[in-house]
Length: 499
Picture 1 (tube, helix red, strand yellow):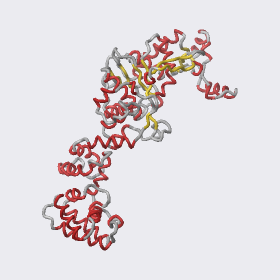
Picture 2 (tube, rainbow, N blue to C red):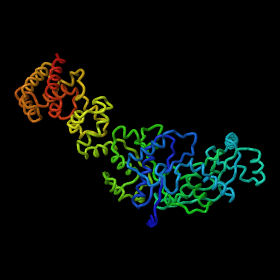
Picture 3 (spheres, helix red, strand yellow):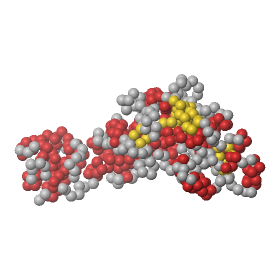
């Protein structure tokens, strides 16, 4: 890539048609990283030209999702800027898009099209009936060949019309792409159709609106998903028709599902940004993981801080081949970030999940904070999602309901021997003067030796007795945190359950 010497201005321009797809966050992040790496500006703009799919509240969700990951913006709908407004429906009311549509009409690069949707369908059907392949159908409005008088007559009759781009019938359109090393991408104009620029309602389509806004807002680099590559020739034509300098294009790879079969989908995959913070992913982990979805520093370094990624990010290291979403790898990375935090900080992060599960008071009392702070080190190393904590810690807050004999009875043991072992453990623990981990471990190890059983057999049965499960936090820390009364009561209940 050529050296960047001038000011960098990039944008992320989502449509408020629902929650923010995690793939959209990745594209926003690449734009943000590019801007921050080169000391440029990052713009947030809302492209709400799709009136039918507009979702109330989606704009707030988009902003909240971006902020959660750690993406801020220098200009945008909420903070304004020198190119306000930053919402396309508001810009439409100012006549911005109509002005440039009229300019395209005047120069002959666009025309008024009076073809109705029904007529378009009939034209498609006629194309197919002729034996031509349906997928090769390319709309060319008959009005592109009308005289000004014919257009004026149709308009005077009150017929609704769209404004379409007059795409050349022959030739090709080429452009270079940074992600592909500046290589030229060429698309034959015969494979294109006459694109709608302005709807009958006067609302611009994405193709006109985003391009006008990018130019007026001084966007220097358009970094977007590779699904926009087929549309790029239209945008090149529009830039040229309006006499504007082209921005630099960089089409970043799509993110595929884990099995590699198709792109991540809003409809089929759990990819709402909200779901990740609800499940307890740390924003630092998500930031790190998303940066690696299509980019790498050296093909081996994975854990990097926000500042390190900003310093190292370049478009040259963005791959052209699709990235692949790996929720297991994301979960592992989140666990690394959780373990990097002090246990006291993790306890604060866990409290909302414990409240939601009904395990602590809402709002929490001082004793709730104190107890959770004590318990957190017991699960700190095992957490991969914060939402796992209530299940991992549930037996500290709820009684064990029922015991499974197959869990209580360890290998090479039977019910009778297990009952005797648990009763002996109860008697031994009942005499412990100082209820702390070291003393508890010493007493129970001595008991195992005196009973002639393996420590694993004794400890395993006690673990199930006090937690109700065979996999749990360290036994002696668990006993210490449960306290004498609850520990002894559960051991007695487990022995009774085997009788």
